[in-house]
Image 1 (tube, one colour):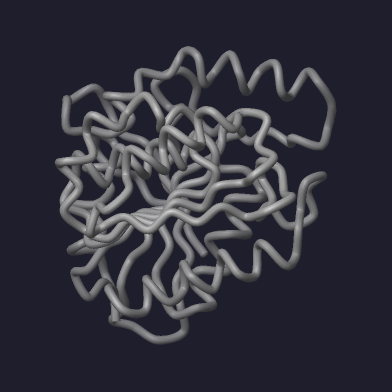
Image 2 (cartoon, rainbow, N blue to C red):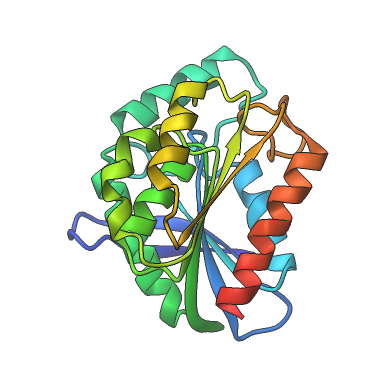
Length: 233
């Protein structure tokens, strides 16, 4: 496990990224897109899990334009949530996609890479993974409980590579009417597979978190692993 620096394409500086490497390379790369809590212990644990599956995981710091190295704990009280929401609201998501693009470019030629790259995002990162599907050349994209996707359906026509959406039925941030819009708006899209997990809340796949659901997470993670193995090799 290591930290690297990636240059921003707009010349404004560079941002850090956590890297987890599998036992065997060359391998495909998964760009791990953070929740609103930064590249924290959860994102590092998820990156390590991806590496254990045989892929290189790269998790870029997407809050760096506001504050570098943010690592918040969602189970440590309201103050952490308040700070996380402030950072999310202060994020320029178009710039975040530029930084994800820069990470993808870096990932295709980084040591150990086989040149194939996917994205996998959670919460805010789930929204950004959908945006990455529409705006980048990633070979596959995976969104866990992405927020606000119903407002991005106009970009669906630009999605050219496989995209999985994992949706929590009881997600307080993605209410039933939003879920219905997403499912209806993407119905019949050849590259998009959307799955709704009954009875679970937002962040059901965050191991150890308040909403963790082992059954739903195992099913969702299996679908993610299957896509990654098929596309990245």
